[in-house]
Every structure is written in structure tokens, then in C-alpha cells.
Length: 468
Image (cartoon, rainbow, N blue to C red):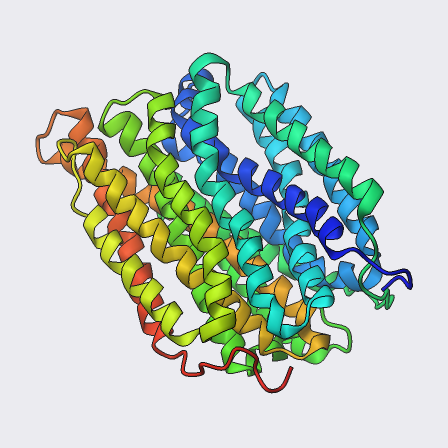
């Protein structure tokens, strides 16, 4: 860390503003998918690539983020990521075709894979364990609030402007973050200049990229298609080689021994599953409101606002609750609330009262952040300081990969439900979409069951794990 006394708040402002811009961009287009489908004349499985492609690139970059944090200063990584994101945003805003838009989103994904690990690693470097819960909670306000509030803001923009203005708004946010960073960000970690293993980078890219590609191709072309099977084969074999290599070489990209700590393993599983459920809701609810209830895009965005406000409040509160009470009971309560609310969303149809759907989704966004921040802090606090960067990188990578997979799978179940409705003789498009939405939430319900089972394994009420 630089010798001069650092102002923690000013350091975190630029990072959190960057994180907000990235998470806003990651999900803002969910509310614009229907208009984008019409604008570029593509179907649901094709347009979901603007989300899946972004998360896939972020997931490819994330594994090497811990190595980059060790080899470059905090300022170098953050400023590069911000400039990269600005470039991708401009390309997306000026795009005249679907593939140009996708290219811009892929460039944005590079920054998405760099910023969040730096944010969490900075927290671990700046704050002692007994204060991390509250700080993680405020960070959760960014991580969980931005994805939920973004559809509301995007809906308002789309009501009077074109979809390109979503990117111009994001550009303003990231440009502001860059200015704050240039004046206030200080280097908070020591540069160690470790050697980067290029083979690990290759196998990581092929592994995570292959699995996400295979899932997306399964959703688009069918699960027995050659592209789907090839993607899975390449991805799974590469991941096996990648993990084996990390255990054998002297300077691995990931220190997989982080998983030797049971608390970290449980925390990671909970974080990625919670984020997966959230992404399912973020992709399904805008589709339901617009195509199932035939509600305008602006109104659909406003209907998501209550759950966004609740999400933001709970993201901040849950961290403080962790500092006071530990993880066990908070994570379990959040998990059961998430399970119940997702079960209720599995029963909605085109005639369900809109206010009920808003209430169900608001309960969901109460439960998810209640469990998320404590689970994240519980996992990361269990690691010794030398594994903090690796733990953050592992957790964020798997979070992005699972989010990409859940987006593709939720879209796939939506499509299966629609086809099932028409095959049974139905002819109401709203009911067809509603049945697809139910299928998507049934998949999310399965994730909730995993979440509840895992939460029951969280035994310790200790706010600080002893080996930190």
C-alpha cells in the first residue's frame, strides 16, 4: 500500500461508482430485449446473447483477475477497465446491427471481469475483519441494487427515447467514475510481479467459455446439436485440465486450496446460487410484464421499482446484521424466504393480478440480499490474507459464469413452456408466455432448494473466522 495515509471513503467512491455502472449495464438491457428483438429482427434465444455474451467474457477474464491484482497496481487495473468499458459502451451506443451491439457488449465484459474483484480485494485490504460485514453490505447495495433498479430506469428511457440512450446514460456514469478515480484512487496492495501461466489462461478461457457457449447453443439450437455438444466437451475437458494444472504449478492463476476452507466453499455456493436466482428473475419478469401482461415497457420498468428499493435496503442492512449476529440464522432465513417467494412466482399466469406479482417479486428481493452479503463475507473472512485475492476472484468468476448459465437456461425454459402451450392446442400468446415464465421460475425454484440445503450447512455464528 502507498505510504501516504489513504482516505478509505474517497477510494471506495470511485470503485463503487464503477461497479454500479457495470452492474447497471449488465442488466439494463433486460427490459429492452423485446424492443431490441423487433429492432434487429431476431428471436429470444439470439437476443439473450447481449446478456450471456457479456457475462461469458466477464467470466473468462475473472479467473486471471487475482493474478493481475498481484502484478499491477490498483490504479492501473481500474483505469484500464474504465477506459475499456467506455470504449465498449460507445461502440454499443453507435451500433447499427445486432453483431455490432454484441461486439460492444463483449468489450464491456472485459471491464466487468476486472472491476468487481478489485472492489472486493480493496475491501479486504482496507478494512479489518470486524468491519467487513458492513462494508460488504454497502457494496452489496451496488451489486444487487443496480441490476434490479436498472430495468426501471431503462424503461423510463425507452418510453421517450431509443435504446441507444441506455448506453449513453451508462457512459455518463463510467466517465464520472473515471474522473473520480483519477483524482482519488490510491494503490492499496503490494505489487508482487508473479509469473503468469499462459496455459492456465488458455484452459480457463476454453473451459468457462465452452460451458457457457454450449449452454447457449443448447438453448438456441437444441441440446443434441453439434455446437452444443462440442462446446460442452471442450469446456469440461479444459476445466478439468485447468483445475489439475492449478494444483501442480508453482504460480497458479487460482489457489484452489481456498476450497480447503469449508466456510469459503459454502459461502461460494450460496453466492453463486443466490445470484443465479436473481438473474432468472431479472430476465423473466420484464418478459412477463411486457409479453405476458401486455404492459408497456415504461410501466414494466416501474413495476420492478419496489423490488429494487427493497433489494437495495436489504443489501445494506444484511451486512450490518452479519456484523452483529453472524451468518447462520440470517442466511437460513433469507434462503427460506427466497424459496417461498420463488414458489409463489411459479404459479403466476396472464390473469394473475399485477399487484400480486409485484408483491411476490418484492419478497424475493427481500430474501436474496438478506442471504447474499452475509454468505459472501462469511466465505471470504474464512481465508487467510494471502488467499483473499484468489477467493474474491473465484467467487466472482463463478458468480458471473452461473449468471450467464442461468440467463441462457431461463430463456430456454421460457421457450420450452411456450412451445408446450402451443403443442397442447393453445392460441393465446399471453398465456403461452406466462407458461414459459412459470417453467423458468420452476428452474429457479430448483436453485432455491440447493440454496436452502447449503444454508443448513452453515453452522458457525462467529462473525470472524479464527484463522484470519
